[in-house]
Image (cartoon, rainbow, N blue to C red):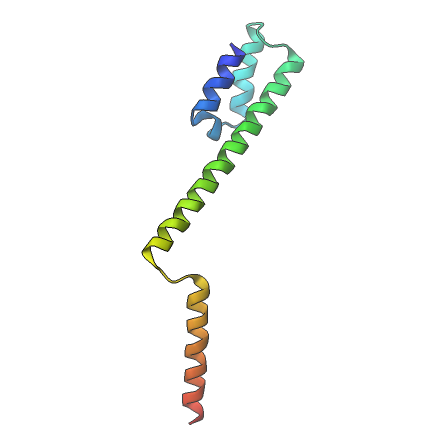
Length: 99
């Protein structure tokens, strides 16, 4: 049962959104059924939370990469491009005032 729980969470979005409270409730059920011991329960909760953290980080990485790719394809100016343009404009305005 506990291996099924691990595999199910590893394959689904559930592991991404799992909270400590949810993990503890799920593992407590396994303890009540005698499928997991108390010491193993603590380790299982921590493992589930760590997997969730890693899965969230991986999803965030993929989203950032895809957003960067999409922005490059749109040929939009970057923040640095806009800052350089703003600096040039400021210099031109300053030059114009001095004339």
